[in-house]
Length: 346
Image (tube, rainbow, N blue to C red):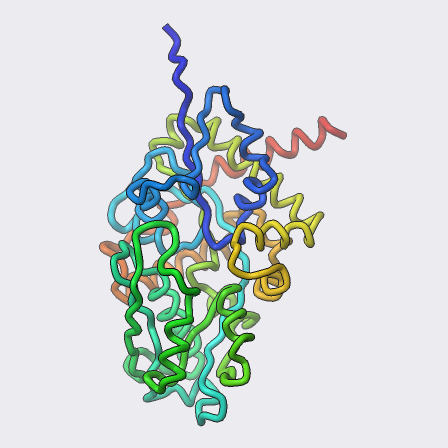
C-alpha cells in the first residue's frame, strides 16, 4: 500500500541576510510545500522546544535545511555528522575593530601587546560569537604580520540559554562594557547589531580598522561570510527531488531580491527584529545582489579558509576536507529548473 505519511522538512536560517529569509517572509517556501501536500514543512525558529531548536547548531534533525552562519555547520561536520553543503552565499557585512576614543590605539599595529575582548558564552554547544571575534581580530592582525601570541585575549563572560539566540543583549554589548571600564583595550563588532552599537556609542569610540570592504575577500571571512546551505547526505540521497525544489525557491527569492532591493532590506530587517532598515542597509550594502547560491571557486575558498581557521584555533573536533563536504549536482539542477520555468513563462 502507498505511504500517505508526508515527508517532514524542517528549515532554519540565521543572521537574517539569507535567501531563505526572503522565501519565508514572502511565503514562497510555504507555497512550494503547501499544507496537505506530500511534504510537511516545519519551522525550527517557531518551535519552542529547546532540544529541537538546538538542531540549528548541531544539525540533529535528519530532514533539516539550514542556511546561515558557517561556524555551527562546520563544527557539526567536524564532529562526524554527515551533512553536505549544497550551495554558498557571500553577503559582506559590517566588521570593525574599535578602541576607546582618545586612546593611543589608532591602527592595527597599535594592537600589539594590548588586551582584546573575546566573548565567552556559557551553556552553549558551539560559541560562534567567540569564534567570530577571534577571526575578526586575526584577520586584522595578519595585515601587520601579528598573530595570537602578540596580543592578550581577554574573556568576557556572558550568560546564555540554549536555543536559537545566545543571550538577550546584542552581540558586542558586553565587550563594549568591558572597553568602557578599562578591562580591555579593543573590541570587534560585526553585523547590524554591531553597527547599531557603534552608532549609539560613537562619541566614546574610535575605529582601529574597518574590514567590511577590505579588497582581499579572505580578510572578510567570518561566521557570516560565506554562508553555506546544508542538509543531511541521507536526506539528499533519498529525497533529491525535494532538495532541488527547495533550492529552486532560494534561486527565485534571490532573483526577486535583486529586482526589489528596498523590499529585500525591509524583509531582512523585519526578520532580524533587532535593528531597523537603515542599519540593515548600511551593515549589508550589497545584500540584494548577494543572495544567489553558488559553488564558485571563490566561495569555496572562503568556506575552506574559515574551516581551516576554526581547526587551527581549536574549535573543531576533527579536520575534514571542505571539497568532500560539497555536493554540486542539486544546485545546478535547481538552477536549470528555474531557467526552464522562466522560458515557459516567457
